[in-house]
Length: 465
Image (cartoon, rainbow, N blue to C red; front, side, top):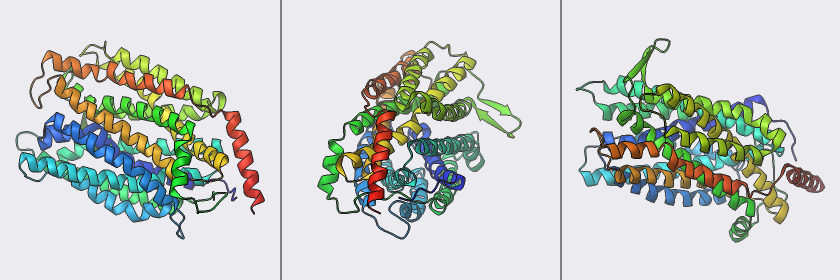
């Protein structure tokens, strides 16, 4: 086993990969529903159903990518080549998703289904191997948590970059006022982010290194890999916890734009002279959330090293539940309290994601320790799958709930619709955090158990040298 330390350049390079993904993930999670309803002109309930249908298929596609990448052999390794091969298609499909051809209402729906489905498949083709890299860059659980922290810090930096630039770029390219061409503005904005994403993915490919080789080289049958996964209790628990946490984030993120457009009472924009551009309250709210995510990540490594990953995750989700429920009782003109609660909720929510990725790497070790067979790509594809399932369910619920509460685009909302939007930032997503707490309370891999597994695997690899 190659025990070279992971260098700072590698950690930065690894982080850039998630910065690339996160720029588009924020476009999807926070603006795509709004883009489809208010820009492209598709009904909210139709969009909700589309999110469910396309993302469920895409989620099932993730394990296929995991199996294929596990069996990939190249001079660059198993997982790094996909960063090279798929970077440009990722950028192209990202642009097409935010392109709005002048089709009939039915044609628009068909176009949205096709482009969004293809985009999510390409997202899987680059992100499942990217996530799997974490499992082969180091075998040290603490080093993995540090790598996960770098990854998530860069992810949220990418998100902040996107959120700060989205609205100004749309106005720059599309104009403002009655003569604005917002469809063109959104397409050009997507092109800017696509170019940045491609460059970041290529940096990740160039700057990272695969070190860990399985005890037993390729030869596993697909049936063996799948049976190992289905029998892996910690995997099932973490899958459920991850899906529930993503439902929480997805509903809150998807409803935020509507909350500030149709409910909160505040100036349309705030002039932050240091940026030279006015930002909407929605942008400020979302950017603050991403900054708080990073704050949570900075604390998660020292806290989890002290009390363990499981307890850190559990307490973070409990606090997120309490703060989320409190959001319902904020008055529509109490902007300061909205922003304070956003910071507190986001700090809690952000801290769990490095833990999830690190715990999936631990589960890959656990599976190899139990079975003698390693399926890093397949196991990490499940983390991507849980992310997609969570966003699928959350995205679909966002569209359906908006329709249920009587939402109509670009008109003044009824009291019932406004109250429903408030619920979508408070009580309803809190159901997800409660479920996540229930799942993680059952997680069996303690730090002591992981140390035993790591030592045993290291000895087996030495015996094979």
